[in-house]
Length: 149
Image (cartoon, rainbow, N blue to C red; front, side, top):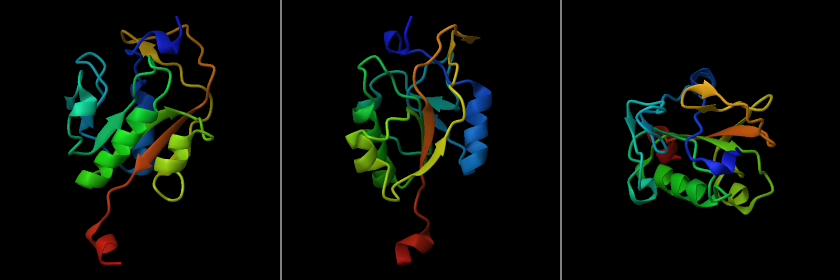
């Protein structure tokens, strides 16, 4: 099985919590989750791209379509619309257009993860060895101070 063959690969909790601590952001909405693998108290298990990300959110988007560009664009636009923190776990595809449009140039903070993340499936670490590096991206909400500048 490859990562693109399932949308149910789960971010290990320790890695999620380490990223939250790094950015000091603690999401309450997991926008790509199931009841079994959510990292937050609230979650969307379907139709996430038709719903509002109106609270601090975490996103480990599906890979079945082969490209997270649509998810990154939607997450960024929701972050701006609702002025919320967004934390996303993504493949490190820094040459991709979506990186340049929605992450680079001060739009987000970036944490390149050291080593390849071994995702979980049904709560168990998979034998799947990713062929890509991962990165956490944090879109930080604007403070009232930032609105006055």
